[in-house]
Length: 544
Image (cartoon, rainbow, N blue to C red; front, top):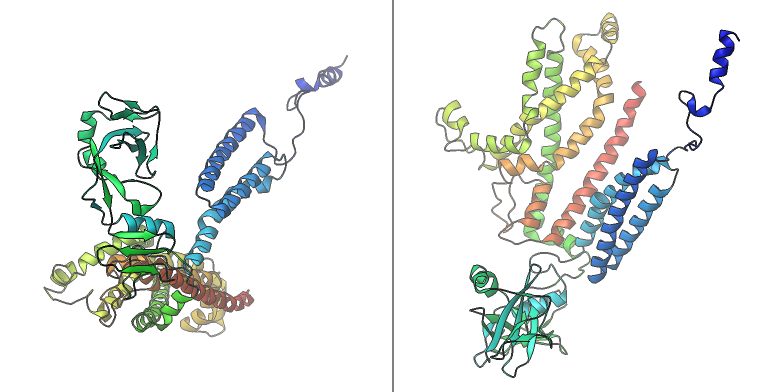
């Protein structure tokens, strides 16, 4: 046998013994199939966790009768299981997490914002009519003068406190702040006839009553399902008395009656109970109002005038910010792109330092530096001047633009530096040989080539500054405030800060419906502008 034959004999052995070969139990895996036992176990564990959370969510949603959300949850869960239990479909396995998160954090938010825009959601209108009836009936309750004394034992189950009460006739009932009193028959009763314990509930010791007395004093246990029947409350943890509101609810007439004055409040059809004189009971409830919020935005004089001013300033701020930041960034990029300049790396590092600081922190720092009385600019740089940088409308707008320029030009400097270095020097030299001067060579050669790569970034920068919340809110909070409006809207407010104030502001209250309507208007405006600008920038593709 030759050496060659010996090698052939060794190579012709079992496939399991050959390097790089798999054993008889191995098989070829199709693309997208999980490798190994560990991978399969990890897949099963993760799917089990997802399914467990989905089942819990389904039960919670069913208890709250949220059928649409329940159906979406079931569909998404089934889709995730189908995708990851298949042996093939590798792209779907990578895309599924991203698509799911997109649906939750983007699509759902957009759809829900659109829904809120057509409702009266806001202060006093955040829940259902049933919740509003309960809240009104329990508001301002007073102790019933002839209320009998109920013997009381405070019990605990989980994180909730329960009242075990014994009525004067010996009836034993159990209830909590969320559950009306219901009669129980298996309670342990002491020698004095007081119920003290129920199976599954732990009675509070005297020391626990003292430590949690504030929590116990705040508990109101409904007597029945009818809010007008009142509640039971305690002052010492050992006895309870009936409390009722002066407002009595008539379920048949769907109205409240003030027993002290005789005033009747009925459903006015606008999400609240109102009297004949127009007095409204709070809270109300959420209802659909159609296009009412959009109508208010354009027809209410104070809001309409402020909205027009804010829209004009928003466009001016976004446009000037892009022009100034791009102009300064391009100028500095050209200056520090000269081959013969020394120390360019050091200068470039110093120029991008503002870009390294968070915008909201920079806004707070500049707010202090531009303070009229104590700011560094007035007191040190201007020798004690009292220039109202942030309280005068036009100076405040100038200050906002200046601070945004300080924050934004490093980004444009970096972008323009990279774009300029990608343009071949031969093109500029060819232009000069044709007789073009430096300005003509820049305008006719460098700038068009620069805009090919920079124009989309300018559009996104415009959209960013259109919604530049941090600089405005941290520097001026939208002020100084307009004098001809009762809303908290000022000279430097952008649409986004105006929406924030309408939704979460103070003074005029929260109005989520109007804020959502304004957010939709912003979305439409930005979408139209972006579509037009992107279409216009297609002309730059011909430069190639």
